[in-house]
Image (cartoon, helix red, strand yellow):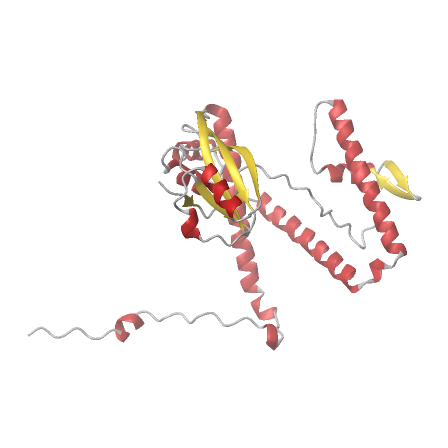
Length: 301
């Protein structure tokens, strides 16, 4: 038994993304109208801005909703104060500000257009959803929740040949300690319903207790499953979940295809500086070219 390495882009465990990017208000559209939630040095913050800051969050509990609104409002107030101070120091006149505003506005417009394209995709049928459930047993009928211990090592130069023979997380920690590599211990739950299917397939093929490693941005995440529980997902709720997954997949595929068509159609309207011009695509071989290049077979005697 030895450590396996899985090249999975998304690691184990949920990662909370703290949004630092706010939706860019149109430079020409004016201020959103609505009930004033607060003013900062005379500058209004509307209830619509608070709602946008919540990002779709909602709760039936009035106290929870009120607390969330307060947190959102305080974030806007702090951001508004910082922005006002930045303007006093004329940071909004810098080239970097102009570039970042244009970039943010283009990004938001592109996202809105992609969202509009995705909205045109036909909703999957219940039969398609049920077929998806039947075709993905690891997610539904054979769904499991796995309890995973982790050791997350900082970027290091330990040779892979020294890592492969290790069989336990204690051995991993001993090696990291001997090399003075900083690491963090963690414990997460891996649900095969929502995990990357490639990761689930790899984990299901491992002997019990075997350590596997996932590279992440230069760091190494060592994992060992110490228990699991079967939690089948069936019935109408499973079909509804599958329908949502299918809708997302079909929308993404449709958007990618439409954007590719748009990009190809615009090719003639794009003019490059010679220093930035991309290399030409490799020429496609004509049918039969490979056969023509191959030596002729000897004639039968």
